[in-house]
Length: 495
Image (tube, rainbow, N blue to C red; front, side, top):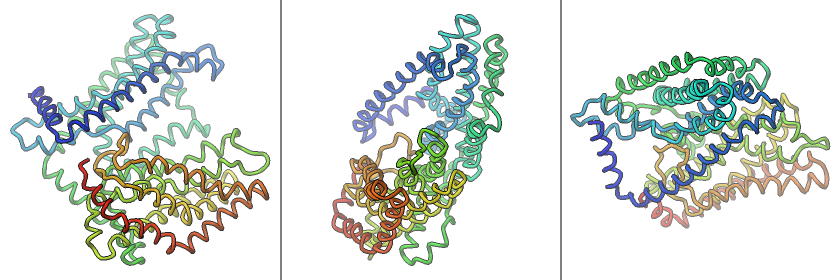
């Protein structure tokens, strides 16, 4: 029965009306994945030399073991955002006279066959052959590389369970942030060195098979944790109830003060929190609030003469990240029901104004969340305030204007990672106004007068944009109306 289920999945793929398009896409993605995996192998080959150059230590194996835990923290993060849940075909199988256990085993095992399952092997096996094998022999290499691979696979099964149980809850987001902060952040701030705490485990794995055996037991346990949870929740009634009830009452009461545009903003907010792809943009926006830590604490980006120009980009990015990411697919989010807004009197205008309201509101929250950067200096708070005003006064209109150039349809229920539905040439060009416009205003005043004069210029331009909101927004609204039939026809295309 297991192989029969695999055969049915294969037939479903080749009988799809979009099989040819999917085949070409998969071939291209396959070539890209092979290229990326080859880079991983090369990184593994040169990893001992890279460690030697960066640390100056001859004992590369000791250094590598002390930093292995950070690889697994990174793996935890990218699995959270990239790894897909193996339940997409569950509804089409549960009603058939097939044992649920067989279905669950098939879905879970199929999810394991992924490039992510071999990244640890490709990255660390070349290093193991160079530094572990000569010193500890084949048994030491087996224990060391096996411990790394088993830990990676445990994360695979754990993440499938974790995402199914917590992905749509605040608890899940808190856990992910806690892993990031307590893992990498604690070492960065000097609270404790997590790598040194875990180093003895990997050192012991080279002289004994006990860690490998313990991790093998953990691997089996993580699989059955995942399997038992999926099995106990695999009911059509539960799936239907989850989809119809989840988040139905979530709205922002503040928006109701803005009439029909506020109602559209609430509808857009519900769209965001009900669908996987749009929720991913919200979570990424939260993580990117930490972007300033890369630059504000790095002496290489500090300027003795005043404010480093790179900080302007950082301020624009932190206070406008959601507007930049979500706004680049401005109407694509509504591709499935765009005709409804066309038929409704004033529907397009209300939709566009509602999106404006949502972008500005979340940008305000991003600015408020960035206020703690004042810890590094008052100039960073001033930078964030000036770029925030510029974002909501000027940059938002430029982003929306570009996003309205031949928008494309997309499926909201698909994940955001490696999913390019809705993305066209305009989305790739979006970086130009984001990078160029603030500097076109800032640099002349900064070079001719002072850095703070440049910030004042950004602030003034933003205020002018805010005061001219009706005129600037009307340009984009009229652009939607003038191209409404072309946009609607594009949205009816098959994905």
